[in-house]
Image (tube, rainbow, N blue to C red; front, side, top):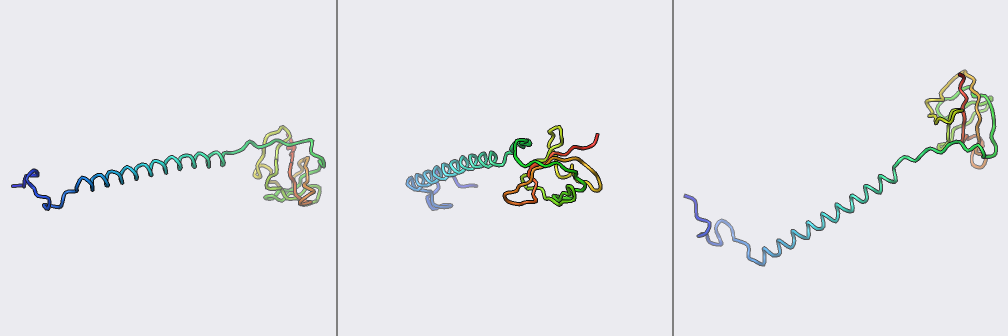
Length: 141
């Protein structure tokens, strides 16, 4: 037969908490819950902030008003190395590359060997003399 919970003593099976201990326990529980909620709100705000920072930006188009445009013939493109009119150039990490219709191109789109594509390009003369910052490729039709 199981013991009646109303007739149990404070020592059986373990001492019952006093009203002060229950108040301290309840206060501690509320404080921890509030702390977790505050941390959750801060984490949510931080995630939204990081999401806004890593959102892709629109790729700017070619600025034809930049000085120093050159025209030439692209004969080979391997990775970021381009051979235009027998001169080796590298594409800048921030280079804007488009076809003649204004469609953005990737490095994969311009990889070629032993071809002749007409190009219009702008070289960054201030930092690296052989680095292209803008490139317009005219593919044959």
